[in-house]
Length: 188
Image 1 (cartoon, helix red, strand yellow):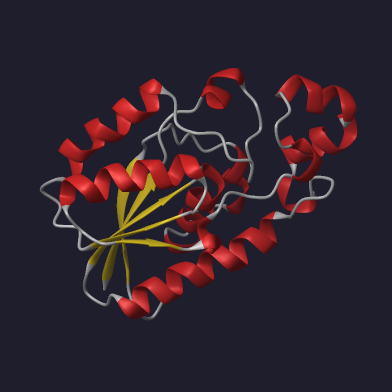
Image 2 (cartoon, rainbow, N blue to C red; image 1 turned 180 degrees about the vertical axis):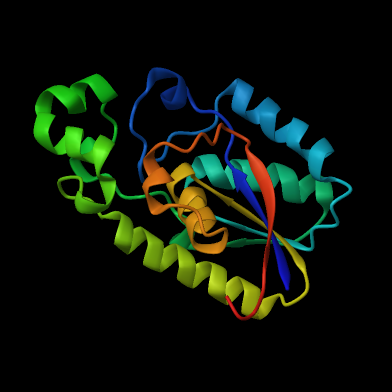
Protein backbone atom coordinates (compact mmCIF):
# COMPACT_ATOMS: atom_id res chain seq x y z
CA UNK A 1 0.00 0.00 0.00
CA UNK A 2 1.17 3.49 -0.85
CA UNK A 3 0.12 6.55 1.11
CA UNK A 4 -0.56 9.40 -1.29
CA UNK A 5 -0.80 12.87 0.19
CA UNK A 6 -3.04 14.87 -2.12
CA UNK A 7 -2.05 18.54 -1.89
CA UNK A 8 -3.68 21.44 -3.67
CA UNK A 9 -1.46 24.39 -4.54
CA UNK A 10 -1.53 27.69 -2.67
CA UNK A 11 -3.61 30.71 -3.61
CA UNK A 12 -3.15 32.80 -6.76
CA UNK A 13 -4.67 36.16 -7.59
CA UNK A 14 -6.81 34.34 -10.14
CA UNK A 15 -8.32 32.20 -7.36
CA UNK A 16 -9.46 35.41 -5.68
CA UNK A 17 -10.79 36.91 -8.91
CA UNK A 18 -12.69 33.77 -9.95
CA UNK A 19 -10.62 33.56 -13.12
CA UNK A 20 -10.41 30.13 -14.76
CA UNK A 21 -6.79 29.03 -14.60
CA UNK A 22 -6.81 25.63 -16.26
CA UNK A 23 -3.36 25.17 -17.75
CA UNK A 24 -2.64 28.90 -17.83
CA UNK A 25 0.25 29.62 -15.50
CA UNK A 26 -0.26 32.33 -12.88
CA UNK A 27 2.12 32.29 -9.90
CA UNK A 28 1.23 32.03 -6.24
CA UNK A 29 0.40 35.34 -4.64
CA UNK A 30 1.81 36.47 -1.28
CA UNK A 31 -0.85 34.57 0.65
CA UNK A 32 -0.25 31.45 -1.48
CA UNK A 33 3.45 31.53 -0.65
CA UNK A 34 2.62 31.94 3.05
CA UNK A 35 0.12 29.05 2.83
CA UNK A 36 2.80 26.79 1.38
CA UNK A 37 5.18 27.75 4.20
CA UNK A 38 2.44 26.96 6.76
CA UNK A 39 1.77 23.63 5.10
CA UNK A 40 5.35 22.60 5.87
CA UNK A 41 4.40 22.60 9.58
CA UNK A 42 1.41 20.34 8.89
CA UNK A 43 3.46 17.85 6.89
CA UNK A 44 6.82 17.87 8.69
CA UNK A 45 5.97 14.83 10.83
CA UNK A 46 4.34 12.82 8.04
CA UNK A 47 7.65 11.35 6.79
CA UNK A 48 7.03 12.00 3.12
CA UNK A 49 9.76 10.47 0.97
CA UNK A 50 9.22 12.29 -2.34
CA UNK A 51 6.86 14.84 -3.85
CA UNK A 52 5.45 14.73 -7.37
CA UNK A 53 4.10 17.94 -8.80
CA UNK A 54 2.27 19.37 -11.74
CA UNK A 55 4.71 21.54 -13.69
CA UNK A 56 2.30 24.49 -13.61
CA UNK A 57 3.90 27.33 -11.65
CA UNK A 58 1.37 27.53 -8.81
CA UNK A 59 1.77 23.82 -8.03
CA UNK A 60 5.51 23.77 -8.59
CA UNK A 61 6.10 26.79 -6.33
CA UNK A 62 4.10 25.05 -3.59
CA UNK A 63 6.03 21.82 -4.08
CA UNK A 64 9.44 23.52 -4.09
CA UNK A 65 8.69 25.20 -0.75
CA UNK A 66 7.69 21.82 0.69
CA UNK A 67 10.65 19.87 -0.66
CA UNK A 68 13.16 22.55 0.32
CA UNK A 69 11.97 22.48 3.93
CA UNK A 70 11.35 18.73 4.14
CA UNK A 71 14.61 18.00 2.28
CA UNK A 72 13.09 15.38 -0.01
CA UNK A 73 13.24 14.91 -3.81
CA UNK A 74 10.86 16.67 -6.19
CA UNK A 75 9.66 15.17 -9.46
CA UNK A 76 7.50 16.84 -12.11
CA UNK A 77 4.78 14.96 -13.93
CA UNK A 78 2.75 16.79 -16.59
CA UNK A 79 -0.07 14.27 -16.18
CA UNK A 80 -0.84 16.01 -12.87
CA UNK A 81 -1.70 19.32 -14.57
CA UNK A 82 -5.12 20.90 -14.18
CA UNK A 83 -7.80 20.30 -16.79
CA UNK A 84 -7.15 22.20 -20.01
CA UNK A 85 -10.06 24.62 -20.18
CA UNK A 86 -9.44 25.77 -23.73
CA UNK A 87 -11.07 29.10 -24.53
CA UNK A 88 -12.22 29.51 -20.93
CA UNK A 89 -8.71 29.82 -19.51
CA UNK A 90 -7.82 33.31 -18.26
CA UNK A 91 -11.50 34.37 -18.30
CA UNK A 92 -13.70 35.27 -15.35
CA UNK A 93 -16.58 32.97 -14.53
CA UNK A 94 -19.10 35.70 -15.49
CA UNK A 95 -17.38 36.17 -18.88
CA UNK A 96 -17.59 32.45 -19.61
CA UNK A 97 -21.20 32.33 -18.51
CA UNK A 98 -22.06 35.24 -20.83
CA UNK A 99 -20.11 33.95 -23.85
CA UNK A 100 -21.00 30.25 -23.56
CA UNK A 101 -24.32 30.16 -21.64
CA UNK A 102 -25.52 26.70 -22.69
CA UNK A 103 -22.16 24.95 -22.51
CA UNK A 104 -21.33 26.62 -19.20
CA UNK A 105 -24.68 25.64 -17.69
CA UNK A 106 -24.05 22.04 -18.76
CA UNK A 107 -20.53 22.24 -17.27
CA UNK A 108 -22.03 23.27 -13.95
CA UNK A 109 -24.77 20.62 -13.94
CA UNK A 110 -23.41 17.70 -15.97
CA UNK A 111 -19.62 18.15 -16.30
CA UNK A 112 -18.92 14.62 -17.57
CA UNK A 113 -20.83 15.45 -20.76
CA UNK A 114 -19.02 18.72 -21.53
CA UNK A 115 -15.71 19.66 -23.08
CA UNK A 116 -14.76 23.31 -22.70
CA UNK A 117 -14.24 24.72 -26.23
CA UNK A 118 -10.69 23.88 -27.27
CA UNK A 119 -10.04 22.05 -23.99
CA UNK A 120 -10.24 18.55 -22.62
CA UNK A 121 -13.04 16.65 -20.94
CA UNK A 122 -13.10 14.98 -17.55
CA UNK A 123 -12.60 11.50 -19.01
CA UNK A 124 -9.33 12.64 -20.62
CA UNK A 125 -8.13 14.24 -17.38
CA UNK A 126 -9.15 11.18 -15.38
CA UNK A 127 -7.19 8.89 -17.70
CA UNK A 128 -3.94 10.87 -17.46
CA UNK A 129 -4.21 11.55 -13.71
CA UNK A 130 -4.99 7.91 -12.88
CA UNK A 131 -2.08 6.85 -15.08
CA UNK A 132 0.23 9.12 -13.07
CA UNK A 133 -1.05 7.77 -9.74
CA UNK A 134 -0.70 4.17 -10.98
CA UNK A 135 2.92 4.83 -11.96
CA UNK A 136 3.67 6.58 -8.66
CA UNK A 137 2.28 3.68 -6.62
CA UNK A 138 4.30 1.18 -8.67
CA UNK A 139 7.50 3.19 -8.19
CA UNK A 140 6.88 3.77 -4.48
CA UNK A 141 5.20 0.72 -2.95
CA UNK A 142 4.68 1.05 0.79
CA UNK A 143 5.98 4.63 0.77
CA UNK A 144 4.54 8.04 1.63
CA UNK A 145 4.36 10.29 -1.43
CA UNK A 146 3.17 13.87 -1.79
CA UNK A 147 1.26 14.83 -4.94
CA UNK A 148 0.92 18.59 -5.48
CA UNK A 149 -1.73 19.27 -8.05
CA UNK A 150 -5.01 21.08 -8.73
CA UNK A 151 -8.68 20.92 -7.82
CA UNK A 152 -10.00 18.78 -10.70
CA UNK A 153 -7.17 16.20 -10.55
CA UNK A 154 -7.59 15.87 -6.77
CA UNK A 155 -11.35 15.44 -7.14
CA UNK A 156 -10.82 12.78 -9.82
CA UNK A 157 -8.29 10.90 -7.67
CA UNK A 158 -10.74 10.96 -4.78
CA UNK A 159 -13.51 9.65 -7.07
CA UNK A 160 -11.26 6.81 -8.27
CA UNK A 161 -9.69 5.71 -5.00
CA UNK A 162 -12.37 6.62 -2.45
CA UNK A 163 -15.33 5.34 -4.46
CA UNK A 164 -17.03 8.74 -4.45
CA UNK A 165 -19.86 9.66 -6.76
CA UNK A 166 -18.31 11.02 -10.00
CA UNK A 167 -20.80 13.90 -9.98
CA UNK A 168 -18.97 15.50 -7.03
CA UNK A 169 -16.16 16.62 -9.34
CA UNK A 170 -17.58 20.10 -9.90
CA UNK A 171 -19.06 20.57 -6.42
CA UNK A 172 -16.45 19.17 -4.03
CA UNK A 173 -14.88 21.84 -1.85
CA UNK A 174 -11.08 21.67 -2.04
CA UNK A 175 -9.63 25.00 -0.88
CA UNK A 176 -6.12 26.13 -1.65
CA UNK A 177 -3.59 24.11 0.38
CA UNK A 178 -6.14 21.36 1.00
CA UNK A 179 -4.33 18.14 1.84
CA UNK A 180 -5.43 14.63 2.63
CA UNK A 181 -3.75 11.26 2.93
CA UNK A 182 -5.28 8.41 0.96
CA UNK A 183 -3.99 4.85 1.00
CA UNK A 184 -3.88 3.00 -2.30
CA UNK A 185 -3.58 -0.77 -2.45
CA UNK A 186 -1.82 -2.41 -5.37
CA UNK A 187 -5.10 -4.12 -6.30
CA UNK A 188 -6.99 -0.86 -6.91
